[in-house]
Image 1: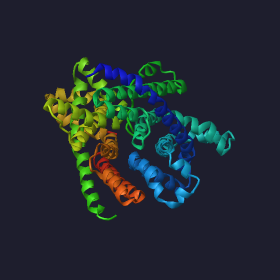
Image 2: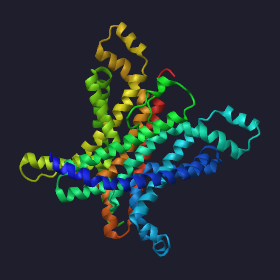
Image 3: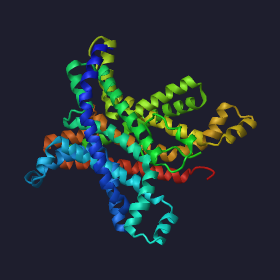
Length: 249
Length: 219
């Protein structure tokens, strides 16, 4: 262990935090905006449309993000029409390719999470809203979505953490976020331990902050005042997929 | 696709064997950690919690890079000359660490979900600790853990693609090489996606089968 090198890494690597956070926040935002209508279609749409959304989420969730990233970054260039079109300005840039891949990925995951939330909204609530004379869009906006969002929040926290971790893949298409900076430093100093451990610590603090923030939001939005339950919130990254929650006792 | 079909077949077996070896090691280690976390003293408990927290909070790619390059440095230092760690070994170690981190939490949750009356009843029947685990808690716990445990296998198959970055000739690596040499990246990466998708589909279907065969007891 070389402490001097670790200190160097601690000075250099935080300059990659900006890009990591930019990629994460932008792709989460884009993914969320895209996933809200998709989740409604997937949960309440006509069978054909629902199946179309399901096939999108299934393919995205069933293949590694690395393959998708390479497909967009290297693969699309093979089509002549893409290179001739105006989209080429965006698609030849690694940043936009990574952002597009991450957004599509996040959208697929968030769609499934929100869909599960939407489906677990009690029927009686929507029926009550109908009997009050609310229109379908009003019910979705004022009743179904807020309830579903609260139900999905813990699972969405996993998605946020997953996206922070997933953004490290951007280093494979030459982007210099935290992992990219670390790999560059390692190739010049030949000290993998020190530098990768510092990079890991930075990621760990980012994911811990995200977990804590989601838990705060959960507490803010929770409607029941069970204090004992609230204090159980801890600094711990959650499990990866929405289905991976510990079974209730 | 030129002569890459045979290479893809070989790469497919590499990916599958990497996932199987990793999954078995990770499961064994995860089970061990979960059981020791449930029973042992608070100090060990805290160590296990720290382990799972760190593993789940750091990108898989970083863990693979750390173990591959760090392992090479360590092995070289010990041997006194340059020794390169095998990418397959590094991949197995790194992904086992990741898998066990998640599996520990899955199993711990499942163990906690087995009603304490079961343990008490087993004790009152005079079963010793081994018998209690083997015949009473184990079977119930595994059934409860099955859905979440299956998801871990699906993410494991997807994570194996990351090991190609340190040079393992798996599906992703063959696609990368083929895309470069034949200048047909779209074809090769689409082929790779199809292979990964079929792998995850097969995994998903077998989990569903297992879930139907072994549903959680008593609900």
